[in-house]
Structure formats: C-alpha cells, structure tokens
Amino acid sequence: MTRSKLETASDAKRLNQDGADLRPYIWVTRPWPQADAHAAALVEHGLRPLLSPVLTIRKLPVSKTPPLPPEYIEGLIFTSLNGVLNFPQDWIAAFAGHPVFVSGTATSEAARQVGFADVHGSTGEGSRGMLDLVRTTIPAGKTATAPAILYVAGATRTPYLEDALAPDYALTLLETYQAELAEHLTPLASQAFAANQVIAATLFSSRSAGHAAKLLRDSFGARADDLLESLLAVCISPTVAVKARQYGFIRIATSDIESVDSVTKKLVEQLKNSAKPTNLL
Image 1: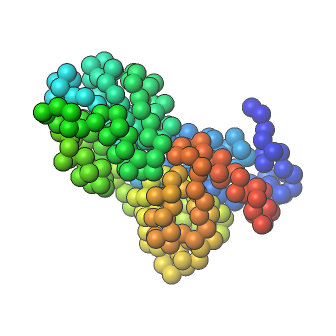
Image 2 (image 1 turned 30 degrees about the horizontal axis):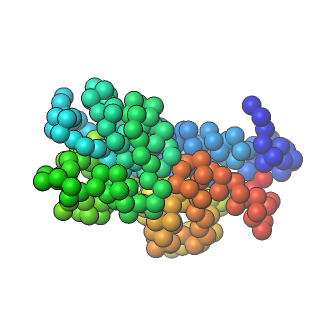
C-alpha cells in the first residue's frame, strides 16, 4: 500500500513513548457496511477514523413479485445507495433495461454493479436535481396515461420528490429499508469527544447531520455547542451543508461533487490547509 503524504508525517507527532496513537479522530457517521469502506479510505490518507454511525439500516420485507408488471413501468427512482443495495435481486433481470434514476456517483456505480444497464445520474442538487432529470428523460403529458415510475426509497424520507412528481406521474412506492436512529454514541466516541480528540466529521445526509448534533447534545449538554463549533463538518452536498448549519455546525465544507470520494478528498484538502496543521498529525 502506498503511503500518502499525510501518513508519512513524523512518527514523533503521531505516537507517544508507549506507542499510543496521538492523532485526532475523524468521526465516521455513515451506517454499516458503508462506514467500513469510508473508514478504510480515510486510513489510506493517514487519517484516524472514529466509527460511530448515527443511523442503522434495517432491510424491510417486500413481496416476491414487483407491485406492477415490469412492462407497465417506464423507469425506477432510487433516492439512496441503500435503496439499490436492498432492492430484491430476483427482480433485477426484469428491470435491467429500464431507465434508472439515481443521485451520486456511488449510487450510480452500485446500480450498474447489481445489473442495471440504463443508469441516469443526477448532477443537480438533491431532490430538485432528480426531479429535473426524470422530467427531462421521461416527459409527462405525451400520452393519455401518466408514465408509471417505481419509486424505491426508505420508510423515512422527505416528501418533496414524490409530491412534486405525483401530479404528472403514476408513482408506485416501494420501501426497501428503514434508517433507524442510533440511541447514543459508541463508548470510544464518547471518550474521544470528552477528551477533545475529534476534529472533523463527514456527513452524508441531512438526517445524519441533525442526529449527529442531537447525539452530541444528549451526551454533553451545554458543552455540545463548543464541540459543534470546533468540529469541521464535511458535507456531501449544499443541501446537507445548509441543514448542518441549522443544526449547530459552524465550520462547514462541502464536497465539490455529490460522491463519497469527493467528501474524502475535500476533508483531506481542508485539513492540509488548516491554520493549525499540528491538529492533524
């Protein structure tokens, strides 16, 4: 494995005399199994991940057959990576040639890997970008019947996209997973925050941003405001960044594109350019 510039910093700054790692932590808030992959990417850059997911993904049961015959459905919408990962594998062959609409490069890659051939990735911001993509690719009003769309999502979601599409499209909702909120920080995360050892967090959804702030407030009370003020929050999109600020994060950076790799890149960039580089190593 090639060692990055960050990882090859002086060991005197990284280890104490007993060999203990002195580097501060980066809070990985993603749910498993995505948390492991994101943590591994941070390690590649010489960073020290702190795994304390704020959400747990639970797969929901679905019927053995699609809610509508595939020939009646003109496209599928996946609002998150978890929608793709929890889509019934037995159905993929029947929908492999359908237009599939996703947001973010990781979800696009996952959709292709599981067998979808016609994947359309939204380049716009959040649900509005997805809305524009669907309307452009499958225009409504050209036939007597509304285009039928299979909308694959989590049981808890914001209603904007389905509300905006409903007047012009025949949406069939398929809930494949439930994102459940973590009840508390992990013991290691609690210790690390108590010792002021956490310098940054990566946030991949508005819900994660809100619950991350809540977990800090539940654990540390009034001191949580100081933690939120000092923590660098690297957000996957402008939408998440706006919500993170509303929830109390002050130092916010936004990835250049809506992808996991871009979040990692932005984090490394921000830490390299930090006014206090000794905080990193």
